[in-house]
Each structure stands twice: as structure tokens, then as C-alpha cells.
Image (tube, rainbow, N blue to C red):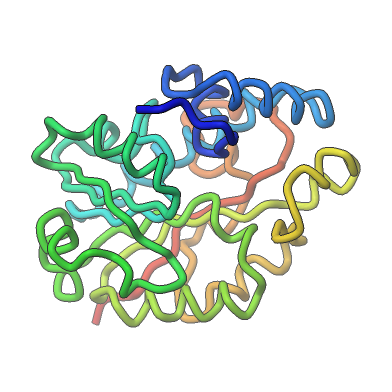
Length: 248
């Protein structure tokens, strides 16, 4: 695979997580961001740990099929590693990330990777959806929607989540995160996020879920969502939680 000349958020996160699937251009971008904000590894590890706890909770509820949007690099504790008995379809819109994901999962019969735009579920390949999320629309599934809300305006986010609600069967789960106003105090880092990036106050999170019903945990800083032991002290950059389309 040719070395890319543009950094990728997915590969920057892989770098922060201690992974092996990134390039010098990603390390340079990650270092520049840290120069404007501060260390990011602990924050993204807290977010990845939240993903793991959320996925385990969904699997413990009897769900064995997952659709992941904005999947990034499928390693370092991603969904199929946390729930090895489940089948998983990872999707992204970045061609380089998709090719990397397909290469990493080439030998897996339980996880696949393909193109998918979260704002248009019709872009997901029906054959892949049928293979890796069997019973889509008829059986409860887990939808993972991390790292996306911050790049969608309120109307687009609400419409997207409502369309997903309509598409999944009752009893399905949504794992979601939101970016807080943490970067407001770091204007240089905020500028690096680009014009599409949206910070939100915590009070705005739950209303954007529409018909999705948050679990009793609510939408809270990710390190404090069903923690395993005492939460690690990290900045509250990400809030997250689980929501359901109730059964019956």
C-alpha cells in the first residue's frame, strides 16, 4: 500500500492507542495537535475503553451482530476483538482506511470492512450487511456511532439517528459519543479540527437522540460510564452512552 501524503484521524488515533498502522504524516499531525492541546493518548484510550465496555454490555444483552460507522483502524480493542463471538461490519468513507481495514480483516470470517456513510445507510453494501449483520432489520443489532456526531450539524445528526432508528429492529442498541466544549480553551487545536467540527454542551446531547432512549446511565464522560473500578482522571473531552430502540 502506497504511503499516504495526508494524515488520517483514524491512523492518528491508532498512533495514540499504541498501534502499528500509521505513517510519519500521521505522527507529525498528532504531534502538532498535542503541541496545541496536550497529550491525547490517555483521552483516546479512555474512549476506546468506553467502546469496549459498551460493546460488552450490548453483547451481554444477547446481541451478536454489529454495524460500525466511522470505524477507523479495526485493531487495538475494536468491536470484533471485544466481542469475539459476534459478527461485525466495519464501515468508513475514507478509501485508504477501508483498504487498510480490509487487509487487516482478510482472514476473518466474522468481521468485514466496506464503504458506508452514516448519514445515508443506503450506501452500505447490502451483501456485506446480510453477511456480517444477519437479520438486519429483523433481529436486534448493535450500532456503533463513535467519532461522528461532532462532524454533523444538529439537523443532520438528528435525521441520521432517526433513520437508523427506523432501520433497526426493536431491541437494538446505539453506542454514541459527543465532543464536549473541552477545546474551547485551546483555539489553535480547535482550528485544527476544521470548520465542520462541532462542540456541544452536555445538556444538548440527549435531546439529539430523538426516539432512541438512553439507558439509565445517561450520556456521561466516557471514563465514568460503567467504569471497571475507579475511573482514570482524564479531561472530559468525550461524553458517551448507550441508547436503545425499545422492544415491544
